[in-house]
Structure formats: structure tokens, C-alpha cells
Length: 77
Image 1 (tube, rainbow, N blue to C red):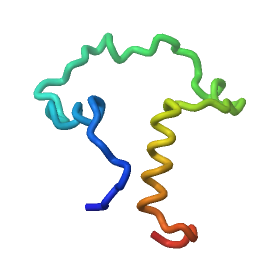
Image 2 (tube, one colour):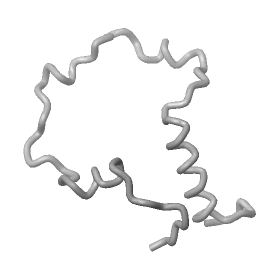
Image 3 (cartoon, rainbow, N blue to C red):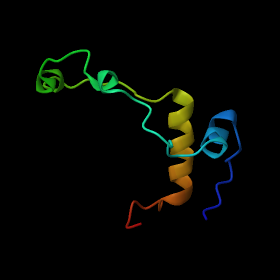
Image 4 (cartoon, rainbow, N blue to C red):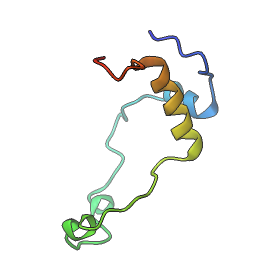
């Protein structure tokens, strides 16, 4: 494994060990998988959207993790 100096257990990280990663039965009905908006997805992606899809704390944690496991020179991993 990789030693991550800042890593610590949290309620969020314990989720992965407190339940199975794969459900025993498929938990969704066909109705659950019907899109709410049936319009063409390509129209949505024409204009770039500059948004963050992870919280500040999550992005900061990933940055620290990458600093530990990726080469500083940007060379091959």
C-alpha cells in the first residue's frame, strides 16, 4: 500500500467498510432509470460549464493524495 501521511478515518470513509460494495439484489426498478429530462444530451454539453462536482474538502483531500502518490516532476508513474 501507499503511506498517505494525512489520511485518517472518517464517517465517510467508514461507509466503504460498513456495507458490501455490491448489493445482493438490484435495488432499482425500470421506472427509477427513466430520465426526468428526455431531451438530447448533446445540446447540454455544447457550451462548457465550469463547475466543481466535488466539495472543497474533497478536492483538497484528493490534491494532497496526488501529491503523495504522483511524481513531482510530472513524469511517468
